[in-house]
Length: 185
Ligand SMILES: [Zn+2]
Image (cartoon, rainbow, N blue to C red; front, side, top):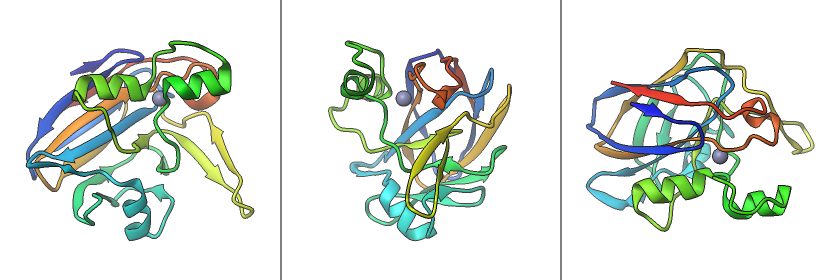
């Protein structure tokens, strides 16, 4: 399945199923949210994930957890050292606030549209390259992912998944250029 630049897709996966998200051209962030397919009130929680993994980043081998402290999926393989759990999905309000741009495409708008939900949780930002120094200062760097690099995930529950190819072209977050992603099973 292709995810065009500045757009999003939704799909379902079954517990035990493995799937991969590929950064087709490199340096492209994938905003990832998911819900228990049986009960959408159980959703991905970056804060619970930070709590249970004792880390503000997501590493290969880590699981991602729900607001009910249940594992939703596991990051089996990663081509980059870690992934971001800190930043919210980009949104129309964010573009207006940071860049004074009106009606900019955004991950939040794209995800709420494809998921047909008003509320979406804060995402796991695959390939997003952030750092935190000892004073707590956060910095965004260009992604380290190259063309064709993939993360491999395995579902721990039946899930409804939404993934957006991040819409930020104004910063190094996506290497100043929004490109596409691909999902394969
Ligand atoms: Zn975004």
